Length: 128
Image (cartoon, rainbow, N blue to C red; front, side, top):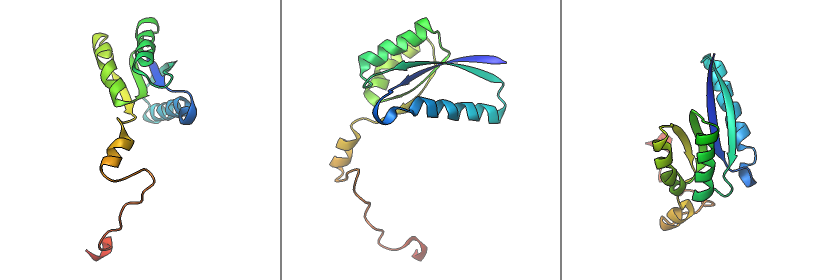
């Protein structure tokens, strides 16, 4: 059986408290269902408030100390852009779930908010 060393860059607090565990369970289930013949050894690094500096430090530990084969994480656009050169230098693939970049500000520019309902359709879908 092949062994995959997986590094996680995940915030552990607030709404993300259970995120790493949930993502790991989903990945384990998918690998079991597909019969991929891979065992996963996971290494988790706390990225605090997902600042660029804390994320770069955590990534370097995963790459240099743990020598992971793949990095997965939840980061914002600014942070993802900043860590790409580090991943590239170490020739390590990554799957990054993007938190977005100033999503509330972008929605505000469109006159929307998280709490707004979309406007009703002019005609019901069935009448077209």
